[in-house]
Structure formats: structure tokens, C-alpha cells
Image 1: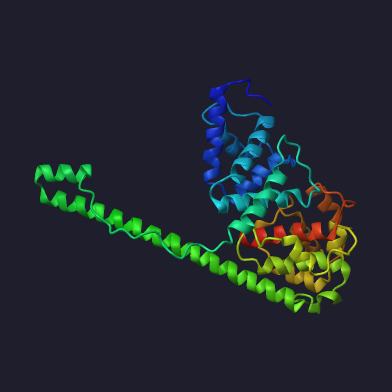
Image 2: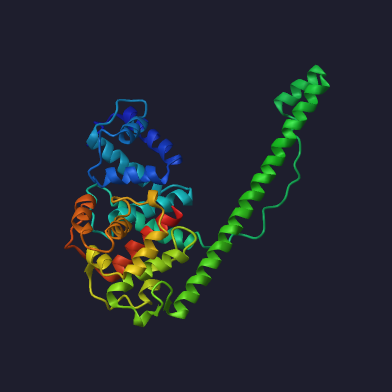
Length: 344
């Protein structure tokens, strides 16, 4: 796909991408990812039509091939966003969509690799303690050079002068309140992260699975990946989760287990665990494209634990029943989906 060196069109398209990314939501990111991964999106659907209009950038609407490229570009821009929340959410969505590498991205950019880098960076930088010393306090003052105030003083209308001073005072107070909210928000986020890390530490030191009511060494090998992913995901309070995620999961005994396919891993889980896991899921955050593992849990739950769900699941998600993942890959993929469903 080429813009044929049309600088004006390129500028309009990129401006449209930047504008779209600023207000993007989880559902919006999911649509961009489905298009970028070419997961059989309904190109004539209202949501795709709306996205096509937004990414047109006041120019000719893009065709289907260009729209997939623009969607991938929008994801790349979101991954590089200065807003850590947008970057973390985008990276989690892209990682979930790749499903542990089972889905391949046919784009001239390694979005999955970029997402992994963002997750690693934010899992470290977002956990640094914010400065407890606020910047030097400066008393709010009225801007005597304000144009509205100057005009009111020239007219001698004291009611307008009072109104101008009140407006300037409210502006100064709003600035102080915003600064205080930002400081409190940073502290609250750090406290949440500290609680999360403490909970994870006790979980690992306790060496015990809450859901299966067994110590880690006693958990059946085929149950470890999904069980550990769910429990660690439940302890996570802030995206994108703790650093050294693979190291944390490996401490539960995953490294020595053999690979298995997604359908087999899910079908082998105990019914009690399945019922408990599905009960806490938010249904409208589950989809065959974005969260294929959680979608599989739902489908198995609907058929009361039988295996009739597998054929339809493979067709709907586009994933092969035979494809296998190493236990650690499966656990990380499931963890990303559980955290996205809870915190996304």
C-alpha cells in the first residue's frame, strides 16, 4: 500500500490517527487489532464504517487494504503514547490478540514485539515511587495583565472588575486543585502497586493455590498454567502487571511441564475451577478475537464441561486445535487475558 508520495494525504491520515488514539477505548483498540491481524472483520459493519470515516482525515476514505495498514499504524502510535494508561492498555490488547504467538501479524511492523517492549518498560517505570516532595509552592496571584481585567478597569465598571477578578481567582484555584489531584492519584497508584506486590509475595511464599486448595507441588501438571495465570491475574491491581512476570510464574513449577494445546488445557481443568473462573468474568469484555482463552472457558462452561465446544471455538477464533504452547507461554497469554478482562 502506498500514498504515492502524496505528502498532503499522508499528513491528513497521520493527523486522523493521532486524533483517534487520544480518545481510544478498549473496544476501539480491539477493532484496530482485529483489522491489523486480519481476523475476518466485517468490513461493511457500522463500527468499521465509523472507523473508516475517522481515519480518512478529511480526505478520500481508505480502502480495505489501506484501512488495515492505518489500523496497525494507529496501534503503533498508541503504543508510543505519552499516556502510560493508553500505552499499557494497547500493549495488553495486542498481546492478547496474538494469543501467545499462535496468531501471526502480516504487517511490515512487529507490533507484537513492540507491545512486549512496552509491557516490560511500563511494568518497571510505572512502579517507581513518585516524588513525595511536591514542586515549590507558589501562592496564586491575579494576573494584572489579563485582557478582560484591563478592559474592566478602563471602563471603571466595578461589577465587571469584580467578575474578572473572580474568574481569575477560580482559574488559580482550579490549577491548585488539579495539581493536588494529580499528586494524590500518583500516591494512590503507588499504594495499590505496593499492596499488589505484597499480595503476590505472600502468594508465592505460601506456595498454595487458593482456587484448587492445593500446594503448588500437589497441583496436577496439566492444571498449573491456567490455574496460576488466573490467581496471579486476580492479585494484579494495575496494568500491565508486575515486572519479571515469567519469573514469577516459573516459581510455581511451570518450567518442567510439557507443552499442550489450548483446547486440551482448558478441557482438562476441573469443573469446580471452571465454574468459579467463569462466574467472575465480565461477559461484555470477552470475545473470540481479543480473549480466545477466556472465550473458550465460557464455551466449555455453557456445555457443562463437555468437549462439544472445541470445533466451534476453533472456527470462531481461527486457532488450530493442534497448535501447542509451552506451559509458560500459555500461562502468560492467559494472565494477559485475565488482567485485561478485570482492569481493561
